[in-house]
Image 1 (cartoon, rainbow, N blue to C red):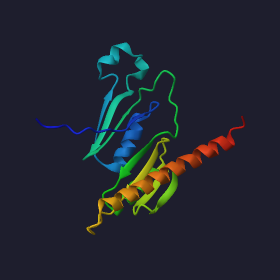
Image 2 (cartoon, rainbow, N blue to C red):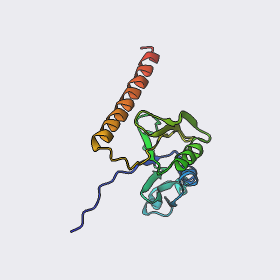
Image 3 (cartoon, rainbow, N blue to C red):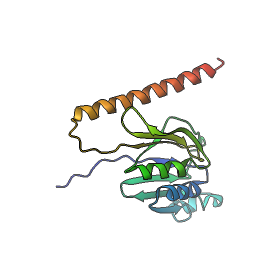
Image 4 (cartoon, helix red, strand yellow):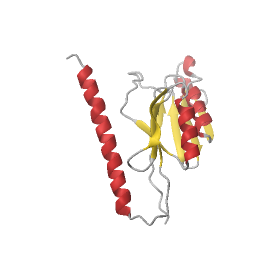
Length: 178
């Protein structure tokens, strides 16, 4: 009996511009992009005609990279926030630099690519669709370092993210007039 690997993939919701956003991500990240519109689905007869070109489901696949999206915002509307970030782990320096440049085009580069204390090249950005990205490249070295050293760096990285979140939450609290 074979075991299936459990995975988790980001699923982005857009407000009518899913095709544009996912095409942009394909241009940045490469891969195969598939769309299903509402008109092409069994829902087509139950939905307003104005929504027939909306994307019911899309998938961008490039090797192990999978990004999904839809125009199917909930009835409450689409609310963009900073609770979720997309993490891209690059395979080499050229790839992370290329991704960073392309994804930040028209958006905001919030943290430039630079070496960090967890011994990786790291940067963050918000793309032109309001999605937050964390890009990371960790060069694999054949140095015989123990797993404990890697675990220590991972712990430092997690501590960095925790402190960054605390700082952001404090900024929000300081700005709240109530």
